[in-house]
Length: 153
Image (tube, rainbow, N blue to C red):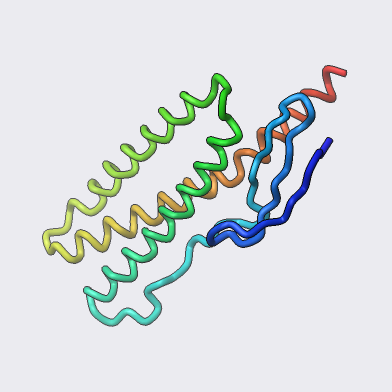
């Protein structure tokens, strides 16, 4: 049962829907209506290694912003539940994995600008993938909960 729907503007995602959860939870959740803007090729016009590094940095910043937004949505969904602490621990562990993986991938190159560009590319790729996982997470949990609820009736 949806108690409230309010359309609003929020950051780069544009239109969002403020939806109150089923009456048993009585808390409002903000969920995106569209996928975050990810996997954008910022390097189409790059001509030099410095250009490549700059555009790859821009891609990473875009991905990091999307990831932070998606993580905040999931955090809101699990606020004041036993899963909140696990979510935070999982995210912190994922960040550590991402940073180590990308340092490893870039570590084979000696030229600093190539090394940093490859590291940023890896950071971008993994961050975009994680943002999509989080974007899809809340609807999956809700869908599963709805199936469970209908099976228990």
